[in-house]
Length: 138
Image (cartoon, rainbow, N blue to C red; front, side):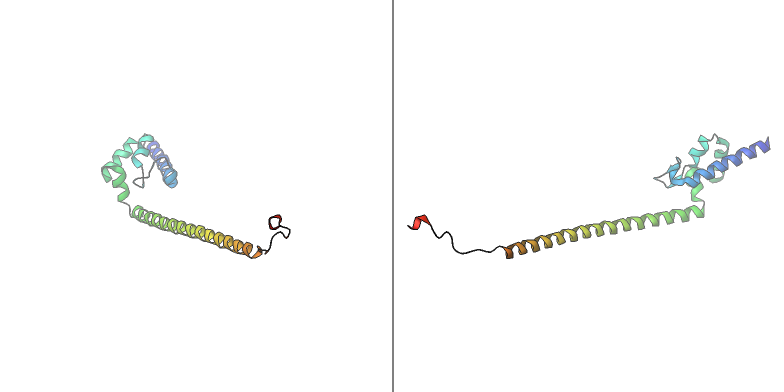
């Protein structure tokens, strides 16, 4: 029986490992807290005994207490926060670049339009005179 329980736990931990690897794509990912929902996973896998055991070791609420006890998770969380900040900064730079590019494009179009207008003005010539046989003068 102990061997069966060990095999069952081994399978449970293998499933848990795979689910954690998927992290953001996992149905157990809690986006607001940036946590993997360990409690939800254990309940869905009918591993109440493991959940109770972990709560005895780490305390409740299990998700927060369990993950906050791991230095690797804390490092991961800081790295993810830094990456998000860098992504936001990069997105802002990209947005400003595209706005500047659009403004330059409009300015170039205006310059080109003005140049064509000037060229057209130079081509138009006013010719003096009019009709020589004007009937009103007779």
